[in-house]
Amino acid sequence: MTPPPAWLAELQRVFGASLRTPLDREQGTLRSRHQRGLSIYNLQYWLRLFEALQSELPLTCRVLGAWAFNAHAETFLLAHPPVGWDLAGAAVGFEAHLFAALAQLDSPDAACDAARIDVAWSEVLRAPEPAPLRAPLSDPAQLACARLVRSPGAVWIEEHRPLLERRATLLACAPDSPLELPAPWPSPRHWLLVHRDGGVLQVPLETEEAHLLRLLEERSVQDSLGELEATCPPNERAALPARARQWLSRAVGLGVWEGTR
Amino acid sequence: MTSAGPRIARDALGLGLRLPHHAQLVTDWPEVGFFEAISENFLGPAPGPRRRLEQIRSRYPVVLHGVGLNLLGHAPLDEAYLDALCRLADAVDAPFVTDHLCWTGAHGVSHHDLLPTPFVPELVEWAAERAAYVQARLGRPFGLENLSSYVTFEESTLTEWDFYAEVIQRAGCGALLDLNNLYVSSQNHGFDPDAYLSAIDFSRVLQVHLAGHTLRADGLFLDTHDHPVAPPVWALYARAWKLGGPFPTLLEWDARIPPLPEVLSELDRAREVRR
Image (tube, rainbow over all chains, first blue to last red; front, side, top):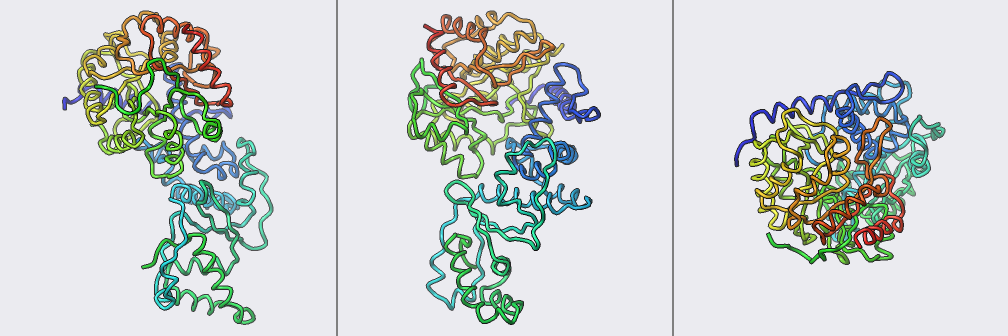
């Protein structure tokens, strides 16, 4: 195929650099430093990307407020400008950037929890809807030695404040300023998110149940149950086998596991 | 290239497929000639968008409209993107596929915007060769849309309409004539929209786009797709119809999207305007 005219690459380099010039934030609004026509492209570049990142991490944006969120987004995008045709792909790596930045805040837990929820939510929705795993359950001995493989459409998370169960309400709040955060839980809560009927099913997990799910991802069923028992308070040990069976059965029914290895 | 996929009537009225309307569309199944899906919204692995698209495709013809081809980007075309686009076009049996006569990225950075170039003969042959290649890869008609723009280049030696018409003619591809873009650019750059219209070979027009725009306080027109179609654009549509109709017509609404009945009423307006 014929190569493009030699000047085109240079023209697009200069034009592209103008588009990516950071916006002026000094007067409390986002303004382009360019004149008229070029300012439109400059503004459109940043506002489109801010919106894309906000829609990937909507709860985080509400918790931080759009102004602070966009400042983090700008720092990230200057270091990692978008590549490829997929606008959602512009957010890849942003949560890691955010975690690093948020760790320096005085109380980062809410924003970090929100980012984990947002990432899990997207991950679940992008995966196929999981189906219940059946085959290995027919042979208990084989199942005991197996390691279970998590369905990409099922993710568990831990939160320190009631963000997930109030997600819809929080997302309805105006994003301009940070939210007044709900009070923290006395101890962390655990949730399972599953892609179901085109949406996300939120299932509360008991603490030990969440612990078991994490163990099952890392070791065989037998070893996981052994570890769970070893860390179980003595007064709960008698009831543990029945409860573990119940948790396993529920996870299998929800399609948490897509296979064994 | 002859039309592929299900037939779209030459005078069909279509709508840009937008998520806020989906639930009502698959309940009411309104009388709409065809839908246009933004290709990039359905190229990824997420199953939800593809499932929704299949629902719409079960009752309506679906054409694909891309924003990520980067036809005028200096780098080679993205073959992986084209592979995915071909698969999607095959999956929905698209009568035609369109994108823009513009660049979107360069030097490894995607700007996710539709960016202009100077209008020079040097670019015509190169752009036409790439557009012809895309059409051959797709194995179905491919159309190029004219841009709305906010800057011009001193280097330009052709008018926008001569550049656009020449690329399409040399590529042997189709045109997606966006009348709102044409109007917005004519106001921003001070040219006569009818001069543009008179350069169009309407036998190559796969479809015409209509949309709303915003006029800023400083006199700049923005292609925002967040309003009803403006009266001067309706007037331009009437003149285009008289000059080259019938052609399939599609309404785009991308921001501050109103309820479906309001969008459908804009299609009724289109019917009236061209009578």
